[in-house]
Image (cartoon, rainbow, N blue to C red; front, side, top):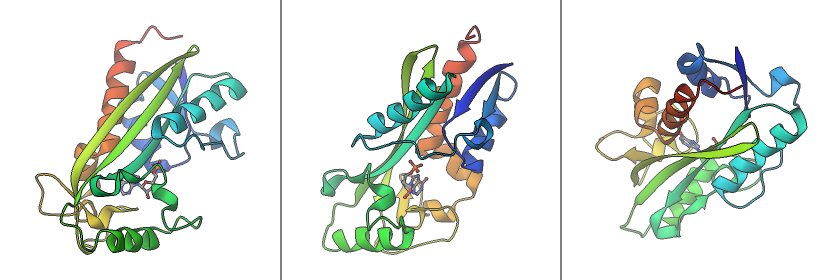
Length: 196
Ligand code: IMP
């Protein structure tokens, strides 16, 4: 079977992809190929980071691969925290502190529009392809729900009265930024079965 490396060790992300591509591609994680070093991702944009990670793997491990990067873009904050979403409140990557900081920065703001954006960079035989998924919504004024991760308790997707943290994982995956980007990647890969 054709092999593809996914630049992640996140089991949830891998499982979602394997469920959908398992018949066509053998998907391996970083751990499975013995990549334990930290891969650089310091380009300053989601696209740049996804490409940086995918190129690193392609150049150092010589395999077809893909990498993703996600950010929460808040309209009234000029799309911050964006590429810095994980470490918005500091290097400890603390989700609670990140949400507190965002709620504080929006405390007097009536425009609560925001979107999650995921970019996936795929490299096949040296050629690069980008796929984007967007989930639009608003930032709530307080936390709701306990499922999910990151900013989920304060993000309410358009068309819903619940936060991401109140939806089941299946419901969230169906409408999420990452779900949409993965769908595009899968559609592309299923049509390109002649990849070596
Ligand atoms: P990553 O690129 O998938 O590691 O995402 C970067 C950061 O964005 C995470 O550390 C979270 O803070 C945030 N984030 C990404 N995806 C989600 C999501 O689906 N819900 C909530 N927060 C997310």
